[in-house]
Length: 371
Image 1: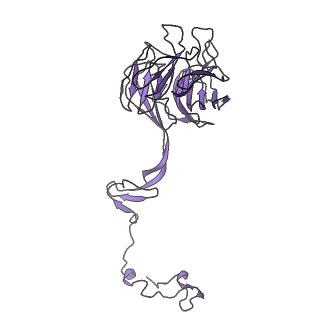
Image 2: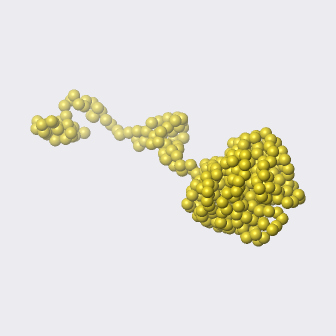
Image 3: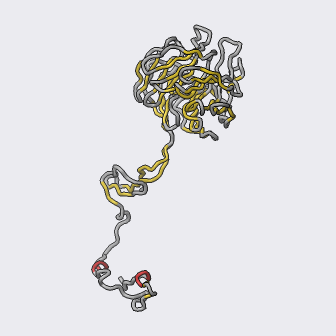
């Protein structure tokens, strides 16, 4: 094996180098036994330094590496990103488009929609839909937000019973309460926020003269008051936002009488509306969920129905996983104030009763096979 020597670190003393034991001086037998060197006949196999386990550790920390003897693979707990994805959820008790939605992926709510126009309400527990308390009237083309036990439904209409409505109802998890007056009609109006801090946007009277408008109505859980208008008239657009001081609107129908799709985004700070970054394409009859700076646009018409989706961080749009199939005039879980999880349900074409569940991209330490 050759002479055993000590490194320079063994020879540095407080008053300088130890001249007796030079840089190539022999190590004393007290430091290392001859047998430990002379009896070496082979080197360990590659990977022999990894911990050998029959199954992956139940709780690892980032940077851990081990050899799984069951799968004969080297694995590690490393930082990685899982892509966003959609998965099929439960089937709704009824079919409908232009229905409204509230709640979350594990506590969702859908009500109303066409065709035929219905007063049905359905509740979702993360896997199964069940029947909830009926809406006071058959309703479609309305806006909704809030949670499964504290939802808000705004205006809308029954195409067979014109004109468009100008009232709102609250849901407590069991039944819809007494109406409050929004103060104007809202065919195609969309709403954001919560049951006690909501912003109703756009929409229009039906029938004409005012098909679309740029009005804003604020609700504090008791009273509706007029807010500042945004710059571009629209209806059947997407909304997102946590409350009255942070929201946004995306796309929609503009140009009264033509139903032209637009790509314009406007953001709300509780007082005024300002322009945001335009959506990558014109889109109408769409929906989405999330906060003003953590939002996902889900489907819509561009101008034909699409499965495309994109996320918004408050300044830029990024394409994300598309839905498995095209969907427009659909509802979403409006009580989800981020893009980590959410869902869309109902819509068309044709009239749908299916649910698609969304899981956003996740960047975290995960177990990965390394070799």
